[in-house]
Structures are given as structure tokens and as C-alpha cells.
Image (cartoon, rainbow, N blue to C red; front, side, top):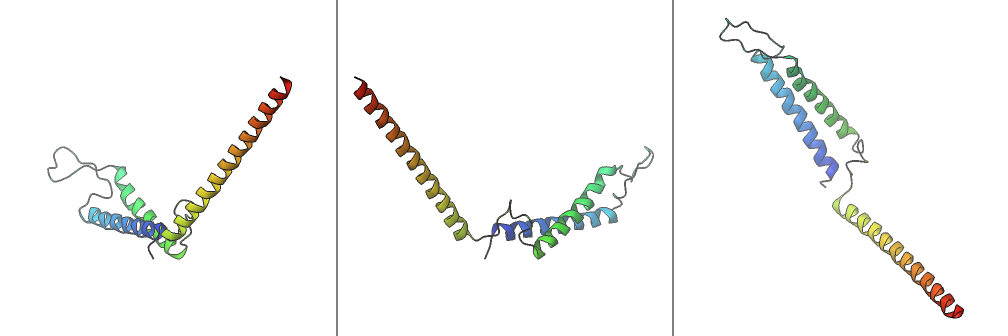
Length: 124
């Protein structure tokens, strides 16, 4: 069954894996570690330290994705690990509770107005 947590788990794991592959390509093309070039070198491309963010985020996302495979409710407050029907039933239940609370408050206001009108009529 496909839940939001399983979809997020696959997306995070795949993103981490993709960033690790890109990091490997950057290492083979000599873009990592950062290089500073002089103006005389034609084949050299200057890179800065921000290139290290790609392998760092790759390893981070990969580890979070693996962790989410072992603990599906790791981010349970943000990403529910329940099926569509369960989420729908929960939402409908909350909606019905909210509507019943609204109707109770409307009844309370109506009874208050009735009492106020009755007291006004008695005063006259």
C-alpha cells in the first residue's frame, strides 16, 4: 500500500543516491576538491568550497532515506504513514466533531437570545 511516508522515503533515498552519483562524477572530472586556477591555464576550471555541499547533502539524504526504511514513523508528525482510507475517515470524523460543536454553540446562542427576549418582554 502506498502511503505518503513510503513515497517520501523513496524520494529522499533516491535524491541522496542521485547526489552521491553526481559527487562521484564531480570527483572524476576533478571539480572536487576545490581548485583555484591561474589565468594561464586553459584547461582548468576554478571551483569553490560550495561544491562540497553536493556530497554532504547526498550522504545526508541517503542516510535519512535508509533510516526511514527501518523506522517508517520517523517523521510521523509531518508525513503520515497511514493509508488513504484511514486518513479520509479520520478527516471526516474530525469534520463531524467540528460541525457538532458548531451546532451546539448555535443552540447555546439561540437559547441565550430567547432568555434575553423573554426578560425584555417581562420588563415591559
